[in-house]
Image (cartoon, rainbow, N blue to C red):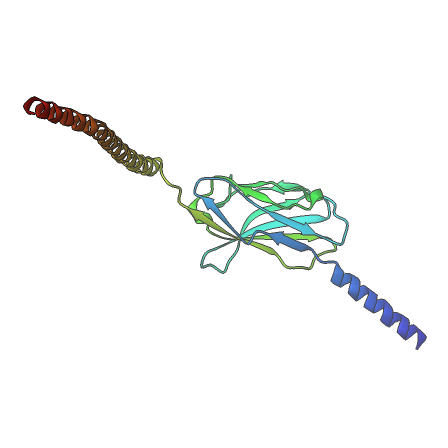
Length: 206
């Protein structure tokens, strides 16, 4: 009985240790990038086992939209292994640092057919369990220079018209106000001149 209990305790300890040896992977849920530009796909990880360049392997895969199959994007073990063919050739480069627990990559000059889900898988022996990290990449069309120019011209023209109308309105109000002030100043003088004329006329005929 004594040995049986010891073996049971040892088995429980081994099970707990195996459960704890899991890589936790953290990625961005969704990333949007403009067509033809570069984007960094971030992937970091934690591990309860010591991390060394020899113990860690990184695999990036791609699942296109409306597809159940994955394509290899990038592989890392001690050194980067960029793709030598396929859609990701000359596009995917290593941007991580294993000792900083960073397994990120960068995609250069992203085309529209990169729309889909990128999957980051990190394994640090003996941490071979754990889920993968996924990032949904959305490639959007960039606005052309002609469209930007037309938009800027339209906005500038509208602002110019508004400023001209505002200037006309202010000028009209200013001149109307000046005319009203001149009329107020002239009316008392005319009234005094008329009063003095009447007084002289009455004196002459008195």
